[in-house]
Image (cartoon, rainbow, N blue to C red; front, top):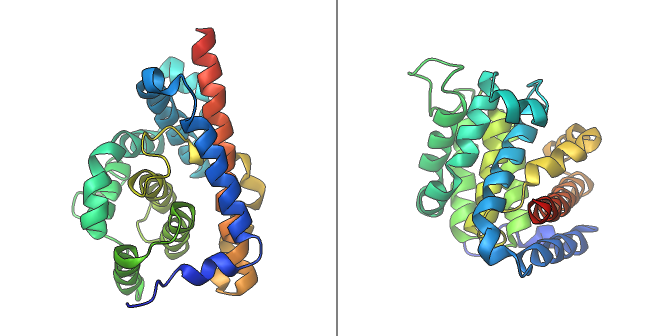
Length: 246
């Protein structure tokens, strides 16, 4: 691939503006004077809240307060927590060998839900493996903003149902990983999954638009994902405030 395969996405209606707003929202979080001394705490809380939101989107039924009190009682929640806890260790593999990193995400997410012979293996449906190869090729060459790349990763994995039975958890984990690995959120303090939960009413519609491949559909999904990053940044600021209050 010579030209950047994702460059044209920034020309879709509303995308560049949404990406810019998302970047500014994250920069406000990263610019907090409290971040250097509290980043580990905020990152841990972001991982917890993000995992909870991702599991709820996948059908788990457990409040965040109950999760704190009782721990994970659902295999999907267990898997989402494992995925988010592994983000830091998967940054380098994601940059070098994304197919291997996806296999690891699936193994973590589905450990309690499928047989060991299926862990780390994508769906065998026709076309899935080929689309994942194309995705890996795109990741190797694109210089598009992290928000755009994360949205494409998220959309491809979820639309393909690439890693059943927890394709959503894997897709959202890979999107979070992309934001970290591509430098938008280097300290993993933005619970973007909470943003998707907050925008849940439009999630499936936006994904269907991505799957349609039309300019309007692709643009709608990218705007939705950028707005989820904004929401996640607001959630991160709320975490800062909660920590400040003790």
